[in-house]
Image 1 (cartoon, rainbow, N blue to C red):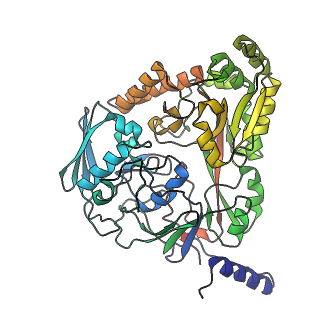
Image 2 (cartoon, rainbow, N blue to C red; image 1 turned 90 degrees about the horizontal axis):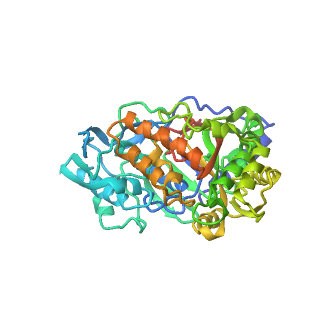
Image 3 (cartoon, rainbow, N blue to C red; image 1 turned 180 degrees about the horizontal axis):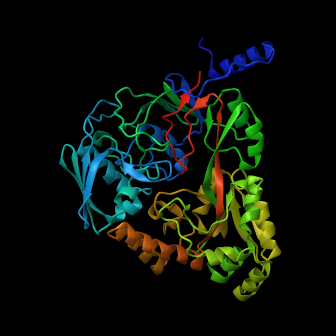
Length: 516
């Protein structure tokens, strides 16, 4: 009988103890091929177009590629596109890379791209692209024409993976499958291919020997060359309370989320763990229900914003101010979308007396505001309640699990506010909570007009000017309260090499190796 990985790990630990407590040093400095990489994350669905939950996209990001791809700082680069031309009006002409094949051996052709993008445009993740798409068609085997209903210089950003789910698959697989129905299997062009998907148990990917990488070096993100060092990658369920022990015993190799930042010093002292911090990788969010209930009152929203203390909330999550960036921008200063617009509103908090005055102006009657949160993701919930109570706002915290949270926030009758987390984005059009359909339902003529300007501007300066106005409007309307940036944490075992910090919630697990 073949021993399980857990048994092997246990035997290794026992062997170490028997050997007077000494361990051989694992060399992770030199890339090497071989072994199985185990990731503590289990997608509920493999088809990224079918799901808006980004944690479901991790397996696809390891198997699949798009026309354009994001680097580790969320910049946009050519992927399956060799080059492209935009006529400044409504047509993109994209030349595909030659010699690329799918996992089933079929060559990549323009018809595959057209079918994949049509399906993506009809999906929830691809709704913004679908809004402007007139048609997409094959000009010849390696040339695709993307025709728009209106001018837009945003198409590369709207289709850059893994910040979006615009992955390319064979037309034979996707052409007749609507986006609301999951694909039975994933076939792509990336460095790993699907061997097995057992729901709630595991996803196993194997190295694809027919993979054709780009020649540019990788910076740790999705752009450039991708190397499948591990023979296979396995995604497994994990218990957040036990994932660190799984890492210590090599039962898993990477926990891309789960470990909390406030324990970072203890992780750094643990010679079995390698914590990897992405500075400014996420921010906390208080989302308001703008469809019905007390949060439709702008004065009440202003009072909530004034009552919250971003630094103290970050300290609750981080344990120290070391990984906190006190900034009102929706994008980091390294992004071309960075903007200080609205900082005077952000900097006005905390102001308890000001919050009380705004609360009196709102006519608030003292009724409890229902706040949804997930205990495992939102350790600051009780502190938020205390800060709001100090300003005279009564809060009813409602703890939910991940599944209940997703379903309950879709029903405007069940909540007034919820706690969420934003991440790093490549473009304002990929920020999910700016969508009119995102729970919260910020849907005003002024906001929609500015989003359309960002979408339809003919050049980047025009798009960025519209974004400056939209960020100002965010702090004026307060559809949500964006708090400061926090570091984002992943933890690996010390036998993993090549795992580099990367912005965004989705990454592929290539260019990573097991030490020896």
